[in-house]
Structure formats: C-alpha cells, structure tokens
Length: 77
Image (tube, rainbow, N blue to C red; front, side):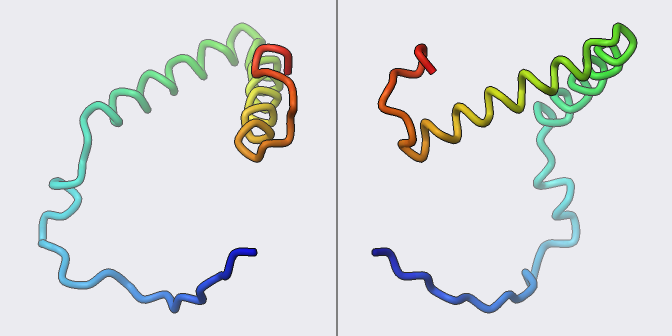
C-alpha cells in the first residue's frame, strides 16, 4: 500500500522579472492556434459533438489501459 505525503502549498518565489517570456513555447502557441482553428471548423460542420464523444471514449479506454483495467490488448478494447 502506498503512503501519501501531505504537502503544504506555498507560492513560487524569486521568479525572474520576465518569467513569462522565458517559459513561453512557440510550438505550444502554434498548437493551440491550430486546435482553435480545427475546433471552429468542426463546429461549423456540426462534427464537434461527434468528435468530443469519440475523444471521451478514447480517453476512457486509455485511462483503463494505464490503470491496468483490461486484460485485452489495446486494439481489442
């Protein structure tokens, strides 16, 4: 049985003045922009709800795989 360690939250201190710029990732920004464009297209075509249902199902399957809930292969699930 695993033991849980109780940690007390405390804010991060002594960050550099330009911390946002130093942590920005242009690839992540481009990915978010692309997602928003695709999301708009899915909504325009009426496919957004179907996409979300498939995504939720896929995440549920992957979560079960990570948790070891299946004795079947990934493809079979």
